[in-house]
Structures are given as structure tokens and as C-alpha cells.
Image 1 (spheres, rainbow, N blue to C red):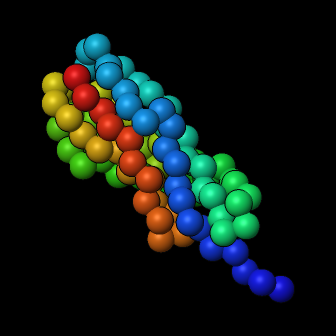
Image 2: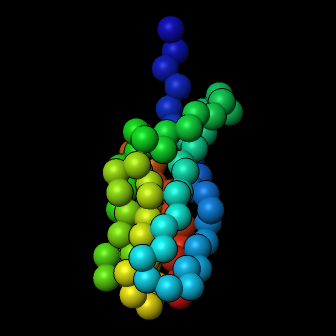
Length: 88
């Protein structure tokens, strides 16, 4: 049995522009494998925000706006990271 590996993680939406603090946005992460198959890994990925003073993100990909600025929301799965941008 050959094992397939993750080649790409796509985070959707790729950009989010909240209009105020305390708004939320659910991000999703989809992994693409070497055989071109895909899998929703939103709940399995490791989520992070590059600037938690701008936006936070939960373990399930739910982001919340905090204050004006720009942050990168990332989802890592299978050693591959996909990114989205929060800017407001």
C-alpha cells in the first residue's frame, strides 16, 4: 500500500476584511495529496494567527477580529501550511 502525502493546504477565504472588532469568520482548510485527492482538514489542522492583537483564531479555524491591522491566519496539516490574510 503506497502512502500519499500532503502537497498543498488551501485556506478559504484567502482574505478577510472585518469592519469592526468582535466580528467572526470561519476559515476552512483543504489538503491536496500527491494523488490529487482532497480532504477537508479544518478540524484536524493546527491554526495560528501571526498577530493575535489583530485577529485570533480557534482550534477549529474560527477567527475573531480584535483591532485594526494585518494578520496572517495559517493552517498546518501534514507538515504543509496554508495562509489567509486578515486586514482592516
